[in-house]
Length: 110
Image (cartoon, rainbow, N blue to C red; front, side):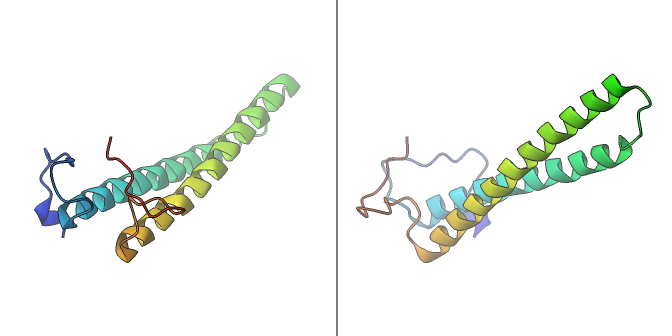
C-alpha cells in the first residue's frame, strides 16, 4: 500500500477524503514517527546504562539522578504517545481515522 505514496505527496482537499492514498500517507507518517520514538528510547536506555556510574561527589550524584528522572519522565510521555499512535493506526485500519470521534465529521487536512 505504501507504493501509492511518493515522497513528494501531500494530501489535498481536492481529492476524496481519506482515500487509499491518504490513508497510506498517514499510516506511513505514523509508523515513521513511532519508529523514531522507539529508536530514541533505545538510545536513551543505552546512555542511562552507560552513565550508571556511582558518583562519589554528592552534588554530581544528585545532578545525575535529576537528569535520569527527567529522561524517565520523557520516556513515559513517549510511551503514552506510542499508545496514541497505535490507536491512530488502528483507526486507519477501521476506516475511522480523520473523522471526529464524537460527530463523525471529517477533520480538515490543514
